Image (cartoon, rainbow, N blue to C red; front, top):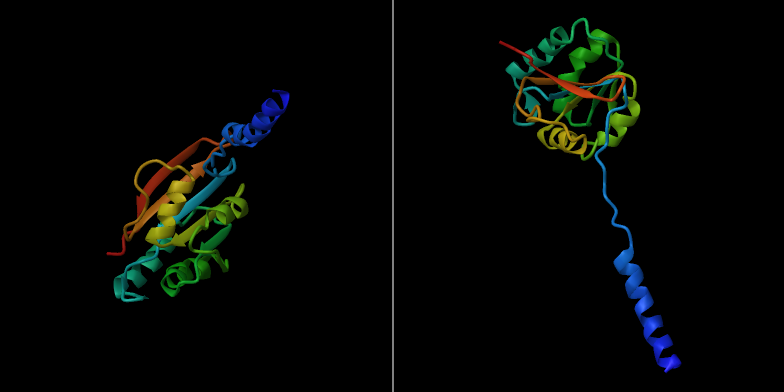
Length: 167
């Protein structure tokens, strides 16, 4: 009888351990307090390159951010993104720093802590930023959308939705 109880207990132990293992939950990433993440989609394009309207919109981005401090400019290596960021880079004397395009959020959160940075992205990675940071409202997916995500000293987030007019 004791032997049978021991065998049943020994067989049930691994199953019980699996059943009671804590579930892992992934929490959304968050901007560090006193951080600002500016998010803009690359400017209008024709094929893979910026169109004439896109080049004007890239220039207009400089004026749209006039007076706002900026510590870094981030972009994937896609040429239309780099071309959109180039006038801002030249005007501010800041290099365009490359981040991975699939999920730039960890790098942006880490490198942007306590700073003001801009991400010149694409629909897919901007949607990922919105999802991973659990931001409310629609993401800035249209040409000209310029959203300023700010985290105050307590970590509370506000989003200022603007538009870069190239007309």
